[in-house]
Image (cartoon, rainbow, N blue to C red; front, side, top):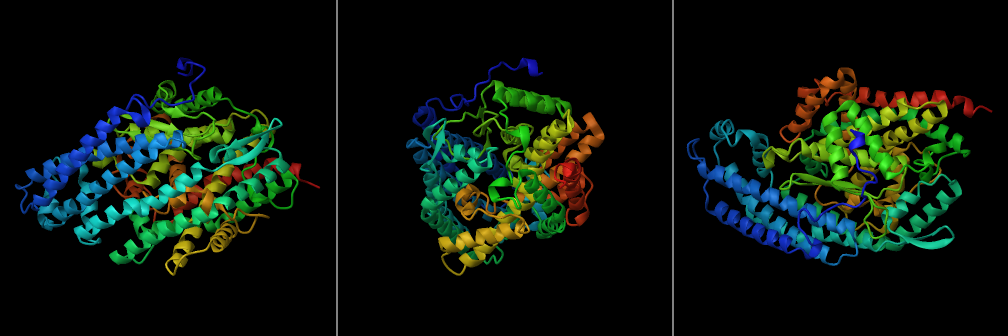
Length: 605
């Protein structure tokens, strides 16, 4: 299969297949116009439709749902396109304008859904139960029932519609301000004797250099660059959070975790048990951090040392080599996953070029009308970049296997989305470690793999602790820059068991996830995905090639049940009990124990 790749691969994506002309695309303008008309039609219909009072009286509801799913698909297509334009070139002044138009249309769509939800809540319970047993409702029964239940906990339709309208220039507006601030980020570094201005994405990649003095110097510049932007970031974060808190207050929601848990279809008990198990097992991972410090010749790791490479992991892996490596390892588990990934590389579904002007981070977004996905990242040639690429391809494959399903059945939560992506990472990381020919090589590869466990168990935990504490203080008033820094460092010390010599005070400013408005608490789902995928990976290793179709079945169910039901059906485990989570931690602990054994002789006095 690898031989079918045409090398060298193009590292820029092709967006012309969707709407030719980029931000000046006439086809995209026409798409928005038709979408606006379709949303207006839906708005008109939901305002004059009554709730069915019998099973026989559901034809109008079926028509509404058909139009709703049409709008969902077209909004998603538009949002994905403008998101790609903004990430690809942050100097494109027209892209944010288009993004604003899409957000306005989305707000109109959400406002119309408040009236649609009113229709659902008006159906008598007995009739509702019978309706969900019939098509076209049965295929999307979970989503409809979920909407109906949540609608009962919200404000009256007119008030919810007003919130959605105000969110465009309020809630989402503050997120846009942050994105504009990041777009102006610039960090001067010396490359081959010349001063070069780096974007946020490029600068972040530079922080992982093998040379510690250079790493520390770059991190100082990184912190200073965010210090220069701190007031803008703090303004955005405070007001974004304030808007969210006021909405929760109006709805009578007392817990800041209520909405993210509902969005992730996850019980609070599951979240608490997961963090409790992780926290109880951190001792071994602290030992790993201390061992790495010794290997680097320091008493304690600094923040910027945690992800630092050991040995030859700093060598460059070309994009073509990374692509071949990923496809080769995917093929060992799933020929279908490998075939999808090969198509993504060949058809230029991936934007990986290392150049100025791109936003930081990586993402995968789907184009449901075209039946394609697009992946964004900045590929710098590190093993971590290869992992990110595998991660995003996992996201893409998840969407790929659901393309033929109804739109509402495709709406899976972030935590299970992270399951597919993290599972893809595990396939590559585990195979690479096993293929090591020497102990030295195995140490380097194990260490890179363990870094991901540290990220999910400690870095993500710090984000969760920070955000929980920040919202508690924000409910009492604005939180200053100085206090944000303190909250961030306190959370990092707690999550890392104070195992580091220095921390990252401005992490709250540098991490765009804190400013996301589509999914609040954009942190714990990553750890859930990592842990859940560990259980899936263990099952895949045990069952071999026969597991591929079972895996696809699991992915196709992710939009149709909560995570507890999903785990029970496909893995036979109870997520509200610690056993599953402990077994997932144990898998990561095995890597740490092997690392400790292999490196013991290297630190003896």
